[in-house]
Length: 79
Image: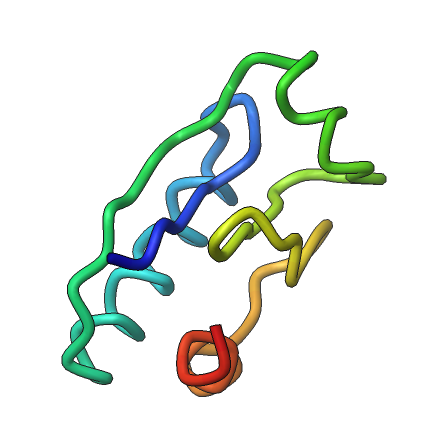
């Protein structure tokens, strides 16, 4: 199963990123396990420069912005 991690303190952008990622997974027909990571040590382990961050199967694919649903679907397809 695909693991999707949302990295961030729980701000509005983090929630928006999670909504975009969930929509992309649903559109792609993928079952995914969503995990919110708010612990700063855990976030820094991904070499993240700014939040929110999106991690697919332990690979950082986006940071510091909210990608489009289409972008996330592309990343999900190749994850």
